[in-house]
Length: 462
Image 1 (tube, rainbow, N blue to C red):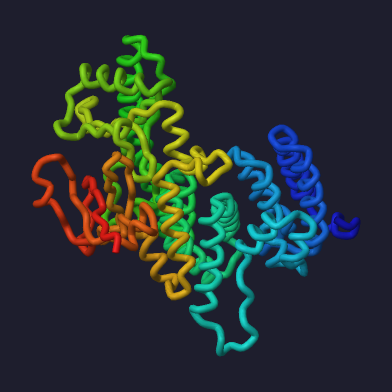
Image 2 (spheres, rainbow, N blue to C red; image 1 turned 90 degrees about the vertical axis):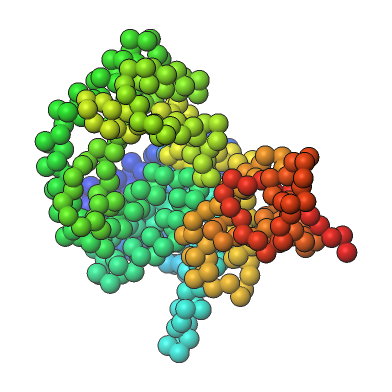
């Protein structure tokens, strides 16, 4: 930044810029290569130059935004190239820099990622302002995100930082961006197991969409928490004491409180604030030991036990869930290992190790299906929104591999989900195939899928 620009920056903003800069440099120096550090130096230099005279609506220097987004990427433990791309994510949209400039200075991967995250310019003629322009922007962004999931991580953290800084925006823009976030980014984050990011996006959206109701809900929750805190602590200590008596190597027992957003649209007063308790243990086997201990010491609610360790949910969630009576109250209990908790909160980020081929099957298939949709020019954004928001059907291949499809998907969708050629020649399927009496289980390719089924595709080579 120039000396004249520096004098217009407050001391607190200068300190924030310096702190973020140091955090990012330290992370890349520790986890990146020498080339990564060189590109990082160049990226920081470029955003200081090209965003020099730009301000956020809040009045802060614009450069704070890309620095913060990059710092979120560091905290998530992602790779150094993603950090550099996060710094550059707004440079085409908000400066004179173009795709070719990025390509020349950083390489094709950075150019494609940054261009893919850039809004398509509005046409000069008002006649051309239509859903098509918006669709094209979304289509390009989603296409980039599903082809390299790191672009999705950048976009989610970019949106999160913008949502946190939305108070300075006009009311109509707050509403538009909040609805866009709820309709597109939150469902995708949920499908990819990004629970923590999903929850914060949702809370921020409802806070902006229903500000008065949100504040009222917060006050009600705070008042109820004051009334209930002694009972909740007694329940928590009861669980801890029973686990400690058995010498279980557990990490902690933590209360799970309701989220304000989940209560905003409900009529009537809030009648409870405690969703249950989470027991965090060291290893997977400890989860079952903890289950045995609490089932021995408390009254168990029948038919409420769910083992998602042996059979994880479609979005990768793992853990054991049960319900007990503690201090006379019916109480939900979640039991997870430390590793499961990380995976449950960070989903695809916790699974991602640098290559799309190393993603869990569910994530790979989901992104592949989104990729197919965004690659079809006839598919409009409403179709994509319908897909990402839809309920899911969980089915299995004959080998036991899980595949997930939107509600209403057919046998033909299942075939294409496995391989294009299989879909091209699909004429039907065997449902829950076995060595006995398979003829009665043959179904046509138009037949809808149902959760829990195993299917074997029947093909016609001709």
